[in-house]
Image 1 (spheres, rainbow, N blue to C red):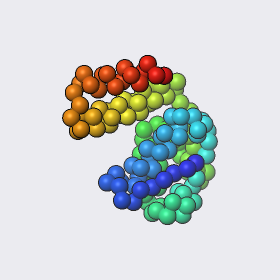
Image 2 (spheres, helix red, strand yellow):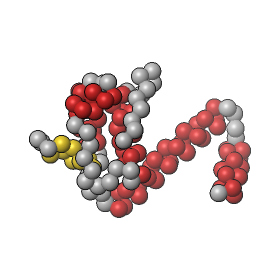
Image 3 (cartoon, rainbow, N blue to C red):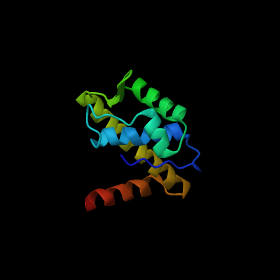
Image 4 (cartoon, helix red, strand yellow):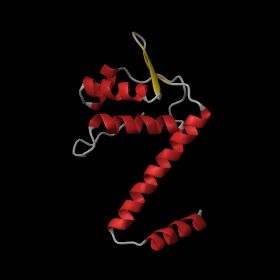
Length: 124
């Protein structure tokens, strides 16, 4: 698993870690039942606090992406197919939201944004 932490980002490190692990799970790179690195191992590899990794793991568990078995470690949770599809859809929507916000920032109108999307879809 390739995790990149940007220390100069305004996004908290635990959120960066969560987002990248979620993406690995959603894309299927991390399969159901796959073991995640231990908190200590991950914190040493990424050179971040173990508490930061623990917070990311706790939040991922709250959201249903991973399960933790005390004394054994954290694993990718078994996923409901509909939940996985919805998570992928939400990730795409977030990417579109970012792209539309960027387009609005540079002054593009809604029609110009739609035109760009139509062009991209025709090329695919």
